[in-house]
Amino acid sequence: MSDYSTKSAVGSHTAQQSKVPSKPFKDERHVNPSPRTMSRPSIGGGSESAVLAPRKGGPPSPRQKKTKASQYDRFIPNRTAMDMASSQFNIARSDAPQPLDGTTIAYQETVANACGVSMNKRILTFKEEAPTSEKDDLRQVYSRPALKATASTSAKRRILNTPERVLDAPGLVDDYYLNLLDWSVGNMLAIGLDQSVYLWDATSGDVNSLCQLEGDAYIASVKWTADGTYLAIGTSEGDVQIWDAETQSKIRTMSGHQARVGVMSWESHTLSSGCRDGSIWNHDVRVANHKTAELVAHGGEVCGLTWRSDGALLASGGNDNVVNIWDARTTVPKFSKTQHTAAVKALAWSPWQLNLLASGGGSYDRHVHFWNTTTTARLNSIDTGSQVTSIQWSNEYRELVTSHGFPYNHLALWSYPSLAKIVDIPAHDTRVLHMAMSPDGQSVATAASDESLKFWRIFEARGKSARSAKADVAGIVSASAGASVGVSGPGGSATASALDISRPSYIR
Image 1 (spheres, rainbow, N blue to C red):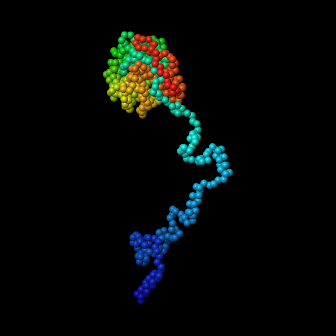
Image 2 (image 1 turned 90 degrees about the vertical axis):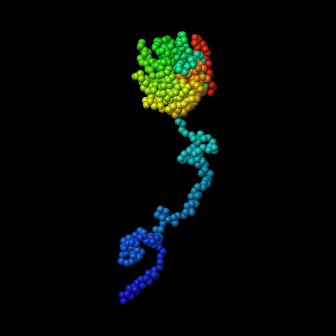
């Protein structure tokens, strides 16, 4: 009885279950249950019915709560309420130009003219439109409020490759180791020609013979004091003479050197003189016993000598290819540099960086080296390709000009610290022996063995027009064109007429 009832109950359950229509599964997890779910113990029945049956208590599981109303992507809304075709059509029509009547067009033109804008130009833009050939006047398109002109834009700097003036200088000794040209702060140019020293007043154009040596002696060097009152003259006999330029009278003679004095440099009341025997003497011109110190370190003739502007260091160069830096308080070199492979005549301290020194070598070297005298390091070098005879720094520009001998006999202008060459100026037919800068720092004078003295405008002042700069140049242009400026050779008078080359018409 129990068996029959059990079978009939099971049979009736199976029959009822077979009558339930089958539904497709909406979730792949119901078709292929996970092993973790299948391993759960059954609750009051078989394992298969426990896995497929829904939970009877608690809220429905999120995995099982899936209805038709929620079958969409959570990030993209249902677009059934949108008319996409109509939207696309409206967007396309918005770009089409709308026809305007004549009254509206006339009104818009009136407003545009009153506001100073063009009808075909957008008012609010991120940047200016690129210019096209259809524009009539590009200056109106790119007009800007007027700005005050600055010194860099108000006038363009012009560097001419022709001299502003050429003077005849007969009797100039063709010797690389001498220093026969100097320009004073009082605008007086001194030049040594064989046995004579001549002064040329750059303001008036007058020339005067200051002194003339006797016998076989010749002028070896000239150097002005800082205030331009006195001129020191070194001779081939080893004497150093001090002359008053205003009264044209000799103040004193300081003897003692055993050979010619080819270079000198002033520092206040102290005059340093370099001799052919390699010695450097410091003279105190105020006292009778003028020799205060003797600096001995060079093995050849001293041909380069210059004090730093603060008087703390003295730089010297010699025919032994050595650059020595001397402390004013000692008689031993602070340090020496031997990188040059020829005589060192060209020495120049930077006017805007105290510890920067430039030195130039002779024919077998042809380099300009830059030294940091604080760290004793070589900062950089230039291969100029020619014998370096002189270096002058600009007071206004970060530039320097160098004069050269063999083989090109030219002037070269360099930028610093890039050391890029700005311009080459063919200067003389023979090697340029000496170069001096005008007191205003705009022009340089060069003397060569072709017995000519030339003046070049290299560093024109910023912010000055060419006309005003022409009037302010250190007497070169202000001297009358008809002035007779002449210098003579040994034993002659100052009667030789000057070779004065007029400036071309294009020079303003």
